[in-house]
Length: 190
Image 1 (cartoon, rainbow, N blue to C red):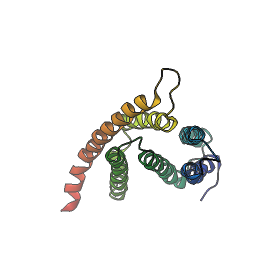
Image 2 (image 1 turned 60 degrees about the vertical axis):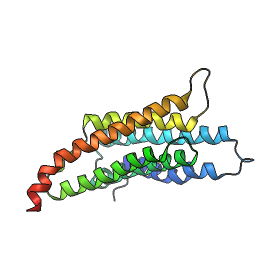
Image 3 (image 1 turned 135 degrees about the vertical axis):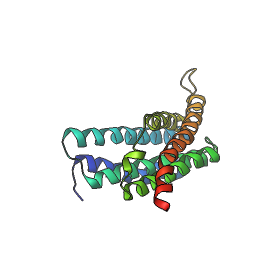
Image 4 (image 1 turned 30 degrees about the vertical axis):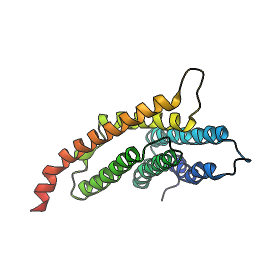
């Protein structure tokens, strides 16, 4: 396991997950609900920024590794899953929306693993649709975590619309990936 700056940032994202979740379990006299929301928003946003940064640094510094390529998406999925579960717990997100997003991530990850095993990984490479889904999700989650109005701006309303858009794009992109994989499944099942 090569330890370089990009991989260190990925590990920090994984280590931030218990802190991110644990904030909401602190007693109310330690942190106000507003402070919990603000800290969780900062942690999640920091994780989203380091997700972009570790990939950029790996390419720029020529520190790409097979381990980093494996660990980076795992860290992303763990952080997003933790955030979605927290949002359901806080009653800011409907459980079916969280299940759609989490279920898709598991399905597409398994699909990519299988396609890689049969030498067809490029058939299910990240699409532009998947990138739009990710952007929508990564903007929605901090808005839903922050929760407090900022003047007339209501992050909960905008975040809810964006997470519903992310759920729709999640299903659409999953169908896209499955359509790309079905011919290979048929070919390799006989």
